[in-house]
Amino acid sequence: MKNLAILFLLISGVAVAQQEMPLYKGEIPNSLKPTTPVDTSTTFYPMGDTKIEILHGVLMPTLTVFLPDPAKATGSAVIICPGGGYHILAMSHEGFDVAKRLNEEGIAAFVLKYRLPRKETMKDKSIGPLQDAQSAIQLVRENAKQWNINPNKIGIMGSSAGGHLASTAGTHFQTAKIDNPNNTSLRPDFMILNYPVISFSDSVTHNGSRINLIGGNASTPVIKGSTKYKELGMKEEDVINYSNELQVTTKTPPTFITAPLTDKAVPIGNTLAFIAALQQNKVPVETFIYSTGEHGYGMINPTAKEQWIDACLKWIRKNFDQPPMDWANLKRFQDENTKLMAPKTNENRVVFMGNSITEGWSQSDPGFWEGKPYINRGISGQTTPQMVLRFKQDVIDLKPKVVVILAGINDIAGNTGPMTLEQTRDNIVAMAQLAKANNIKVVLSSVIPAYDFPWRPGMEPAGKVVALNKMIKEYAVKNNIVYLDYFSAMADERNGLKKELGYDGVHPNLEGYKVMAPLAEKAIAEALKHK
Image (cartoon, rainbow, N blue to C red; front, side):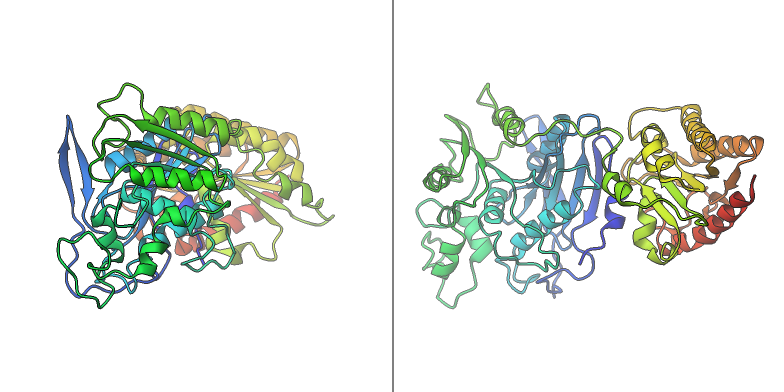
């Protein structure tokens, strides 16, 4: 359903990485092409001493990925649904700001830009947001390994109407509204609900959210200004289905829920009804109720000293965090390495050691690997010090005749902190020396050209790539090691990646890998001839 190799290549292992990616590959389910223009603009609304980012419409749902420093990563992850009454999305203070705070605690975060329910853009507007939430859970869970996430520690969070969406995902997961060929669990492992809309009952609902999600679908005349669902032309079955306090079961995920007693926009009755339903079904629930506060403050209630986000983080640490993930991701290929048979007598086994560019090669061009004694040991986002740590288990212990090392671009990006080019060069040299000491022939690859990093713009990597490649080539020539020059064949006039050879200016597409393949084959053949 989703070939997500291209999605996770850029970002895994980047401290506070930010990469916005499409939620769907290909056709967006349940979508209609609007006949009139849809406002997808962003405006900034004053709020206290700052301005909050408001998104007015969504045609292309996305996830923005925030990954913590790998040294702090706990394995937990949270998908964040900003609020906005199903009319707009409060992307900054209910989305991005929360993601950054979670990253500080080692928690991966994914901000969901979900479609707003509109008849003009959806066949069934009532299921559109839930489809996007389920797809986000599916995407994160299916790619948990690449993002250093425990697939059983993936939660969902929402504020206001985003809380309604999150609680819908947490109570409607047994019915998939999307294609799910792998039968991936769509159940979030926990929920975090911040001043949430929960109920669509007349007495406590937020009428705007209710109208936007399920209004306008019945033939009953609409009585403007009414707060009664029947007079607004809504179906009773829809009201019941999306009153999430009525959908709680013993399988509903553990929940942290918070709201102010004085919320005039979304009555506290929403929160209390959900708490009661959770308790009646013996679902663990942690509450944090403010005595005062207006609706929509995000993480910080200005009327309070103690903040819900701090209590929430303690709750996550207590119930869902695990010990920090191993920094070099030594467990990534542990099972595959154990199952791998020793090479046959005449087998010219080759290990490709690298980062996302190497890892993505198997996904983008599987034909290059089929029927050949090639082993891919690339890990997305890795830097050279991480590769040095896993070089023995992922290369030496596999007893190849040749290792092809492609590394350095993530050092330049600062994925594991600042590094000099000399330090990167020395780590590559260390891997080459380890290989030679174990009678493994070495191919040192140039770094692929890159003019800019889309996830960390403004770092100007092009000149650094050229300089590092010069260092690598000088060492290779001096020590009779094969130098594999991808750069010259793939660089444009700016020393960036040719547009037709990549999809983001850093990572090759299929055409890019087709350029790399014969160069790699030639270098391997040359290395095998070396004595």
